[in-house]
Length: 196
Image (cartoon, rainbow, N blue to C red; front, side, top):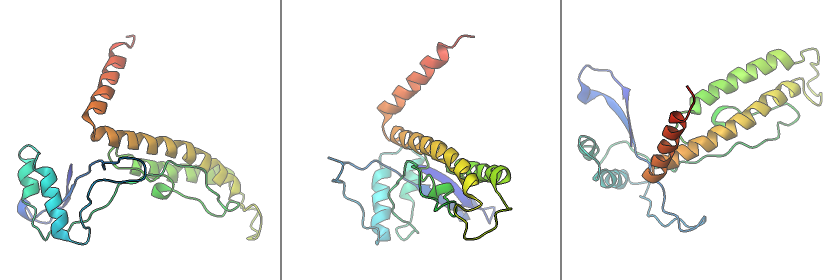
């Protein structure tokens, strides 16, 4: 569960706007069959009730926070998805991807914005170092941007794929205490065995 203050326009906290997010793993028997009942996303009250049911196992004050959500609250239901970055066709240096288009990832690790900023910086440096403005023929193949995009994309393909896979692993750990505890134990073991 995730909570953030979205808007503070009044000193009275009861008038603040909050964003509350719940995530959970879907029960899957095999890779093609989802067995869990998904709330009807067209009915706000159904989604709110599902959220309240899931929060009933929370400790206070979180349980009360979730239970206090009005049945007609602005809500939505969505599935978390990702795409481990793979090379794409840049149409001879005429188009590329950046940010979530290049490496859509789950949010539990908090790396989406960092990677988007890295994309912008990497693209800027690639253009500064590899763009050929002397070749201004619009019909040229490859385009004057081809070398810059080649350099940029090589970085994004590797970094993006690693970030997506790490974020997915982190999301799965957030929903599986055993796996999360094992990773914590591994981290503790590494930190205690380092030479000083």
